[in-house]
Length: 432
Image (cartoon, helix red, strand yellow):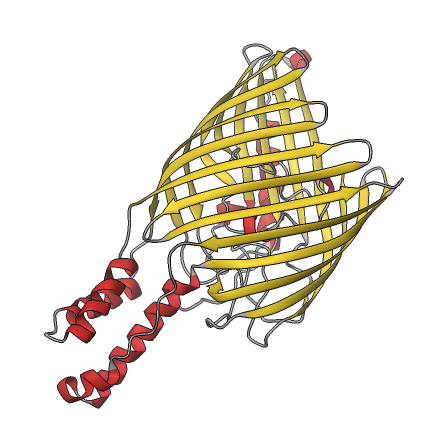
């Protein structure tokens, strides 16, 4: 039943080419008849990292679901990445922005996934900004810089919170910023569509008809923001999924309640499509001369697929160029894990031993797929950041992760039992 992985396609070269192509395209978009009012700026960022993963033998660590799943002890590709961004000013009010990122991606990642941003930004005045194209999903604290490791304390954004969130939105947004006393306010409306899912095992699903809003207030080093959004989740109905649904339909039609009822339940869960999802987020960040910290909470409601509550908090204290930090993340799912149905013994007298074993295998595979999408885990992190250069920082981080039964969505090869893992990482983040 689970879709089989194809051979892994290299994404590093495609990412670099996409970055360079984006910059070249943005440069070509300049208007030659207005040279005095145009300008091209190239910038970039990157991370070089290596991790040691101590986990059960089949577990594969991933920073996010766009990455390949490998149960390796040493991982250099989980956090390593390189990004290039081009900003082109076309007159006083119009700017073209393109950003490409080279990083390891899953086998079913699309070529266009390397292009993170590709949009036109129009500012009619100092308060209003309109963007159209491929923009960031600006509903979370790190929406602008979650791939720019130099911009935050830890080596990676808290995985319980950010690993499954999309980074891009094909559509647009409109934002207004204004001052009220000493406070800077900002409000935004956004709309569009994006890709989601574990692209190492299957084609990505889509969040369609995304519509959301955000409001934030910043004053005296404190930033408070809240976001809401709704969307429709659509999955690609491939041959494997259609075959499994048909087989489950046949089992659900049998005059055997012990088989028919769970088969119908699995069929409804596996065939769920066009699911209405709602997202609610609240975030808080503080940046003072010494103390730095952030915390976010998100509630995702998309039954029967998932109902999640995820929270993280991180706190650091700067001592000259050194900043020790500690963090905690936790995700819980209100949709219960499914048990493997016991069909073989009941079906053997009716269908025969071979067909009964095949039906049992189908039930086990479908349950594995459905439980594989559940995220129930928590982690503690401690680390140290050293800003040894104005544009570079060395980071060390140690994470202890606890995965609950049927809650290993962020790990590859987690069959269902609970377990613990430890991840030690060293990284150098830089900008240019």
